Length: 322
Ligand SMILES: [Zn+2]
Ligand SMILES: [Zn+2]
Image (tube, rainbow, N blue to C red):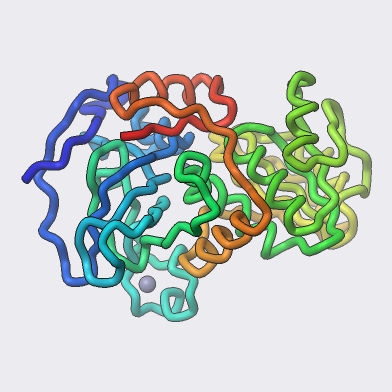
């Protein structure tokens, strides 16, 4: 039996139909018939060879589908899969429910064939029931983009926190919604004036196109794929404030020492989320109606959808459907 997928054979190559023989279904694996898969910026990086030579690459790690085989889930149950598809299950991080930090963590579409396909097999610990309230198309991007912004919000913010979100794109528009859902006062930072109305609808109380106000924020999430002026943004933090980098900026962040020392501020980063956090994030999304703004296209248009994401032209997430 072959799985039908779309793959890039070398860096920056177009995605072409690609059939492959899956690994045998392990005792703790689940096989999923993919109905939807979001297109994330990481998929662009993988296809463009920015993160090494892993070709052929079948991108896709914002997967929703129905269970075909496996022991943990009922047949036809609706489940999702994100960036991580396995971990050792035994190290101190796995035992503490921080599987994302496991040295043996495996990626759904790096070294494995991902979700731009009709079927996939992953370890059952990394498949998640999708709450009934969440439609598949608008929930698919939650599996990577959603949990990427949710994790630092739950770690560094609480109701009443003043949260700034830099960049109102695939990650940013979800960050605004989750921050609002958690009861934060949200400021959107964007250079695109035309995004103000939507940013406010996503949950921003304030919309800023220029520099942030000094000492005004408890937490800043940088979802942009560029290094900002760290002096300015650290200056915008209140004492003990946190700046969290989420976008994979290729350039170093230049942090002025005094901006850290004075006010005891923190610069950190965060990636995706562990299974327990993904389950919590899906519940929060269901309760508060958090939904990606999506543009749905058929799976056979995977190459064009990837290119639109590459050009930052998606508003705000492309989602492929079988
Ligand atoms: Zn992603
Ligand atoms: Zn581990």
